[in-house]
Length: 116
Image (cartoon, rainbow, N blue to C red; front, side, top):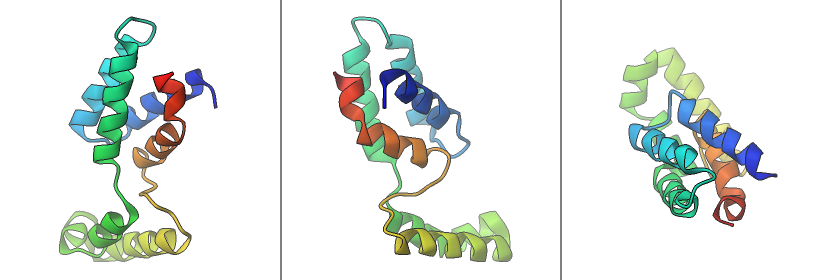
């Protein structure tokens, strides 16, 4: 994977409805810093924030089976969401696969490119 592809992953992650406000802000700071003297520090901050915010699979499964998920998605939606989370865990996934977490995993797996 090249740096430009990872920059697009940062943009996709930040644009996802499931991306938290702090990660959106840190992503914007990184994107603004690309090509400047501040890029490496901004990349370090981005990686640290992703590591803090990414949802581990056990957290996803717990949330998917919670009353809060039922409140958000309704009973039928929560059942589907819980089944998806269970299948994801059974497949060996380590993290959530939402529109924010999926690119976050790719960024973490290739962080040395951003930090280089």
